[in-house]
Amino acid sequence: MNKQKLIIIVLSVALIISNIIWAVSYFNLDIFCDYQVGFLKARTQLSEQLLSVMPVVSTGKATRKEVITAAKLNGSVNIERETQSLVQVGALTFKFDKYGNFLELLKD
Image (cartoon, rainbow, N blue to C red; front, side, top):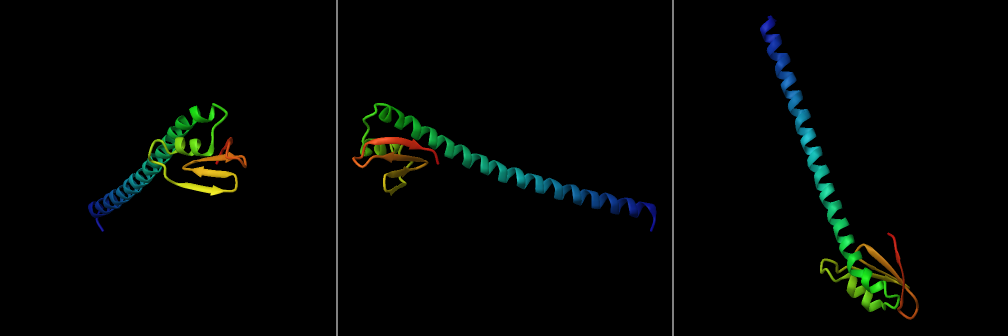
């Protein structure tokens, strides 16, 4: 094989390898960006929920209905799970006493 053919083969292989590396890096960056967008949306929703709930629970006399209504205030949250004295609305979990009065906000 002459020298020119060898150089062309080596350069072709190098080009293919560099394109593969570029493509893998691009797809990894795309996946990372999608993850970050999802993370930021979840944190924004959590912040909105906390800001809507704080005035209600800071009074110290908040009822179950008031707290749940405030947590759903921004309209993007409609998920509600209830177990015994705990109610989860979106990313927030609230604890109530047996009379329905707010006790504490639990961290997930």
